[in-house]
Every structure is written in structure tokens, then in C-alpha cells.
Image 1 (cartoon, rainbow, N blue to C red):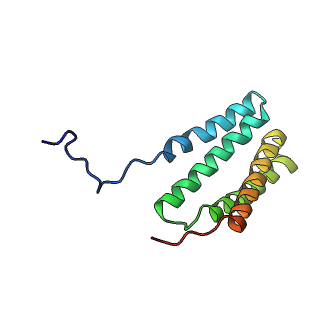
Image 2 (image 1 turned 90 degrees about the vertical axis):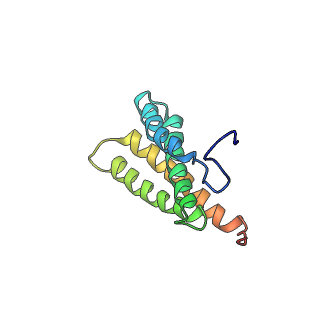
Image 3 (image 1 turned 30 degrees about the horizontal axis):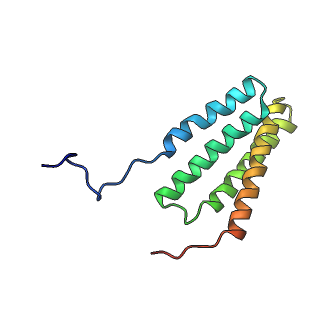
Length: 120
């Protein structure tokens, strides 16, 4: 008799990414609310990194570096709109731009310096 009926190695394990996706945006908003810039940027990095992990785990991307670069472009564009137009959400815009720049550096650095693994 099995200790854990219905469980075997053929079933896929649960993914940790949805928890971090769900926490990323609220953490970023708490950083904006309490005027803690670093927390706002960290929340955005957590959100984008987790969504990138989901994309990579689902097999939609071969590596995580190009989706990170795509998120970087999107964040810099949205942050630029918020910071430099009449919307007047300057702190939020700067936090989004900062997170976008960090993601761009991570994406470019990963693409250039991390060796590609051969499929098994």
C-alpha cells in the first residue's frame, strides 16, 4: 500500500511562481504608498521576474533573458509616460523606469554572459 496514493514521479510538481506574481504588485504599491522607493522597485522586479519564470517554465521561451528585456522595454515606456507627461505620477514613474533599467541590464547581461545549455 502506498503512503501517498495518486502521487508519482510522472505528475508535475507545483510551480512557485504564482505566489510571487501575486505578491509583486502589492509590494510595489506598498512601496509607493509609504514612499519607500526601494520597496516599490523590488516589488516590480519580483513581479516581472516571476512572470518571466512562468513564461520560461511553460516553455514559451527558451531562456529567461529575452522576456526580461521585453518587460524592461515595457516598463521604461510606461514609466516614461507616468513620469514625463501631465499624468503627474512622478515617483511611480521613476520607480517603474528604475525597475525597467535593472531588468534591461539583467536581460542583456544574461544574454551576453550566461552560456547556453544544450538540451538533454
